[in-house]
Length: 131
Image 1 (tube, rainbow, N blue to C red):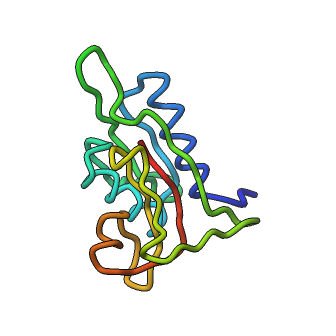
Image 2 (cartoon, helix red, strand yellow; image 1 turned 60 degrees about the vertical axis):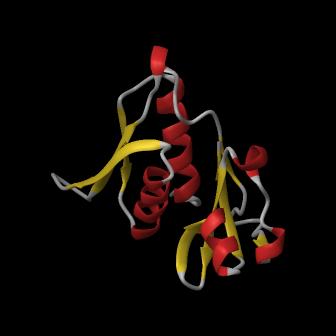
């Protein structure tokens, strides 16, 4: 049994990017789809699709590469884990690599990037950091 499905998704994305794969598949859930949509809107992945087939639904995440197959994702870190939840106020949201990366937060208005949370002055659970 998997205890942290978000960490599993982030690990699959990290491993696929390091191996220079075009896409990766993860079991689908609403929170994973929301994280993937934020990564897409921030320009870290090219596309995300929900695919149905035999068995449970899956999210197909298409990775984004630049020149010389340089991945758009250099690193991913899970911050708040099931064993150690991390909550931040809007004025304490960390800047990832001086604004070159993003933090993803779970707020009372749903998942959002650190920029949106600061703009709306909303704190919440710090899900992960991507750079």
